Image: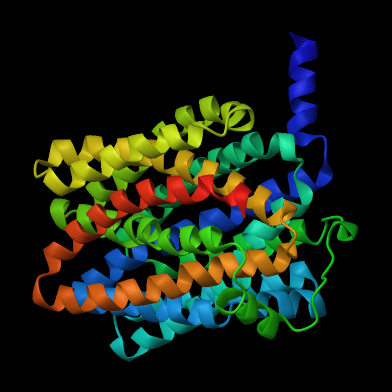
Length: 395
């Protein structure tokens, strides 16, 4: 038993780079969870209608897509850790603006622009770093463990922010966010530099050329783009729909804490399975479609509470499985890993801009219909992407 436990510890913690990624993930997720879950709620509390909130996010993803090649440009010039530092500083500033927006609505366009540039810098690295560091036969368990850490840090973040947000003590929240990002960067500076190399000369030109002109990896690009409905559902539709339905910040936070704790069980069980059988991705896809459908028809608060728990239970397992497939794809495809990581993000962001712009117009006519459209489209995309992902190996 002790020998097995020792082997288990060695597998997860035997490499210094794994530990550094765990630390970065835990701390940065704690800080980012505050922004991701509570920003749409804070905007709604500040008097912004659903249509304007969707418009703000549309601008955010447009900026993110346009400037994604910055990630490659800055990483090649200043290194990965310094690039992440720039992104984290911008992310913290955007959270400051979200809190300030309650008193000065003129900042509402600065929020998506600054956060968009932050996402453009950081998001490709979330795919690139594990692709270069993690062994192929350990990707599923590695990603599952990262999401377990996400669950733990998210629970702490939800409780922390709920306490200080209800007291309007934004200063403490901001200080803690800055400290988390700072400690996260210290971990990244300790990564083994020899794992990373940049086989591209012009980040912007090569990324845009591959995205729009190159006919390779069409299924990969489409799947990356269509995933935008899943991201929109997760970041905007679910938290905002629940908050409007419950109309109570404490109850809303309680749901997120309980449902996030339930995620731990599914992630612990699924990690090894994702390494052994990639078909588990298609199984969890089927479960996720059913849970999204319940949001369309549910009205009772108790059903919404229960379904949110199921949603969180399935969503991170789905995302963990998806990330495992993407990391393997970008690392072993003949295209440069960093370029394909950026193309993955650019496809996602440009789709999101188009979709959110369209939803913003609909939201001006009937805000609640927007939620149903997002949930229905998310179900369809899970089905379509399952087929597209099957084609990755054939391209």
